[in-house]
Picture 1 (spheres, rainbow, N blue to C red):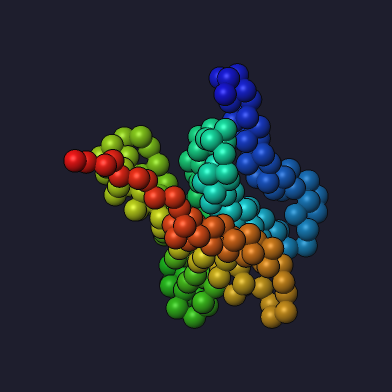
Picture 2: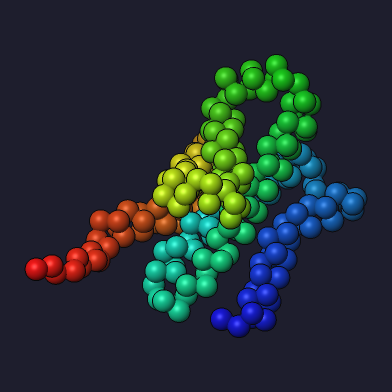
Length: 206
């Protein structure tokens, strides 16, 4: 792929990833822009965006495996993953600031009593080491094998994020279903590839 094309695609990716945040900022600066419950709007938007970006991050490898011509997609995985953590952090801070008022006792009580907060906290904590080790330096220090093993935590984080979404909505609300189905298919695609991937032929020795 040409360098100019790659730069254009990365620029468009940055714009797309920042667009939900731009809408929230615009809404905050306009009367009634965030609706009757701004706190809920911020929490819902950032949480949903986190799951969308996690799904896109998980989609990179399965789609790339469809054709050698799609190998360039790997260059976007880290960017998408970091944006997922970025929105997950805003989502968490929205709870810390707007719902618990920075009260540690309230937060600990909520985590113990509200299972959806426990699942959300687990998802963020799982994403934290992935964001911290997203650099080339971290890959060199950990080694490729250990780095890859560590970054498989994204699978568990995505599951925790989906569970967090389901436990947060009211019974009978199916809003989380589309993202749940997409993430489930992406995880199953990895399992299927691991079970049926072509085995490399070992060289015949005399």
